[in-house]
Length: 427
Ligand SMILES: [Zn+2]
Image 1: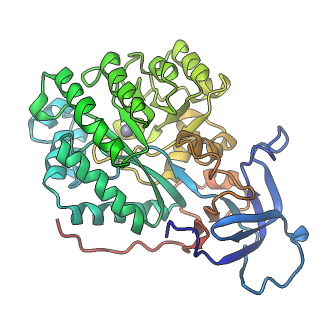
Image 2: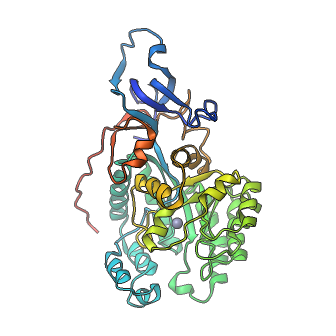
């Protein structure tokens, strides 16, 4: 489905709001570049024309599928630019333990936590990992998502990290959405390296990063720069090595404390810095100077019941592009619904709807360095589209908890409203 060449030609007309998020059309009066009563023509998986329905060049369009949107809203397919979608097993029992007040340390002691997922992912067959990942992507698409970034990082040894990235390469061929793979060997310290983080970092830089880059298994390298995980010097070493090998950079920064990851992101010109709950003013200035996107993940704060969210409005006021993503993972945020994240951004971070729409389209594309290809609607861009049964984009946010998606196009292929198949999975 990700191939664009065999997509049929399509005309969608009678669109109530055609939300382009095209910087060329955006202005203070029309901040999302909306075309009212719009129409769009798709050819070979790309956008061939767009404008008002009444301006659609007349003709027969004999080879085109003609779709009447009946006044619905059409916008760029949503982009989830930060997920940990490839893993085995689940940690459902920990949810109840957390409600009972158990700490993360107590849960880890009882055999839970991230290392449980690492154990299960290491043991999982390629077939079961592939099936699980495809099913999760299918579910994301059902909310209007057409591009998903997926991080490795539950293998944490050479064989298992490579296994996950190779499975992702396979998944991409069959996937209902496009996948952007990220290598994240620096997600946690594996059990066999406890207390020897420097040795583990050396291993990543010596063996894993060169192999991942050489086999073209990832576009990005990410690292968990956090107290108790990888400090700034260790994160720097991982990211600089990744950069030398041609990988683009992302960083998990300032989630639990202000360690200085944002400054590092700015200095190394990372494409994005993510989480940022405790970012300082200097950190914000560094992101602005380095041109990084701030990717905020309010689902994680919500799921972990953290009271203070990332300072979204401060970042926006400073001129840093803000993206929103799910952070879908089996421990700290099991939310695969990007629409729910959009609602949380409004309700918990006071982000205006206009900023929220940009954060899951144009800015999310920027967080993947794909803004020239997708994330907005203009001639030549990938025909990734989401249609919603709402009169305006405000309603999309106002109707919290309802999935109002009616149709989705991935590289010009019409998928309809996805039905999630109940696959029987073999593990
Ligand atoms: Zn994450």
